[in-house]
Amino acid sequence: MTRMLAGIAELLETPRNVLRETIIRSISATIVEAPTLRRHRLSNTEVTHQGYVLVRVLLDNGVTGIGEASTLGGPRWAEESVESISAAIVNYLAPVLRGGSAMAFEANAIRMGKAATRNFAAKGAIESALVDAVGKTLGLPASALLGGAVRQRVGVIWALASGDSGQELEEAREKLRRREHRDFKIKFGFDRPPNDLKRLETLRRGLGDDVRLIVDINQGWSEAECIRFIPALEELDVALVEQPVPALQLEAMARVAARTSIPLLIDEAAFTKEEIARSAAMGCGSVYSLKLVKSGGLFEMKRAAGVAAAHGLELYGGCLLESSIGAAAHLAAFSTMPKLEWGTEHFGPRILVDDLVTETLRFEEFEICIPEGPGLGVQLDEDKIRSFARKD
Image (cartoon, rainbow, N blue to C red; front, side, top):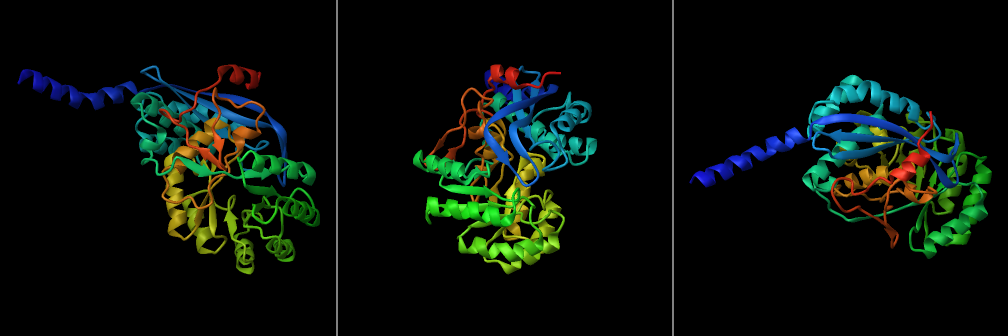
């Protein structure tokens, strides 16, 4: 009887022990600049080195969790830059979390919300690192902490964004040959619409009718240009058009959506749950792009997915050229969602000259595989981090 009572007491004490072990000892941020294999162009910038902020969370049990915040060419896609992300983490977010439990995910999100408004990329990177650390502590994949996986693979889209139709056609054909990608997103907006349409015509002819093409205008067109040129996209059987007009022009986007048979993908127009609800109610699009840099955390991104789905929007797993670290965090959440109609575009690890982890994510049979193992399921390559880390 004494032995049995002692065993019961030990079982009851285990959660308390785990909570004590997951006390946050420190949070650090490192700016990393990783070279890309080719120039990646958007409507307002181009990237040859991708900027990240690597977050490390150290627990009292000695476990280190990792997370990543990604940007595109500085504070151009959104208001955050690697410099502001690092400063927000070190000066405002880390101080309010140190000494608390990494397992208190919702309480930690509330603390970060009180410490800094928006700063979604910074918050998302920290929460990813906390989930990674807790998963490693418990020997569980991150997906188990987010509700449990319903899929182990996700269809993956590749972006064509050099602006050179010949290079892009060769690149896409190689992806098809290797059975890595058969859905392609064409970046528009950095050239005149007629020139972008010529690129698209070249790609459609060269790739055939069975390949699904998505066009991302990156807020690059006016409503008038949409009225004039989107019919040409319809003729070329474009499956989806992403954020054609500036993010704040919700009324214009709704009018564009009403005029075309192509679904519109809402991206920069909606970050928060409230913005998702408003843009959906206005009829700005039929699909929503999920990103940690918009939601500010894995749990909040799942809530964003719920709000979008409740308003009848289909879901698209967006990316910001994350390495395998940021991609693994997204995939952990995506793997738990009942529906992810458009798959994901987390091709980021494949556009880098060198990924930031020891084993990059697997791409096979036109899908990306959810990482296995505890936490996010990826391990840092410290040599590459030292090589790519910004030198003061």
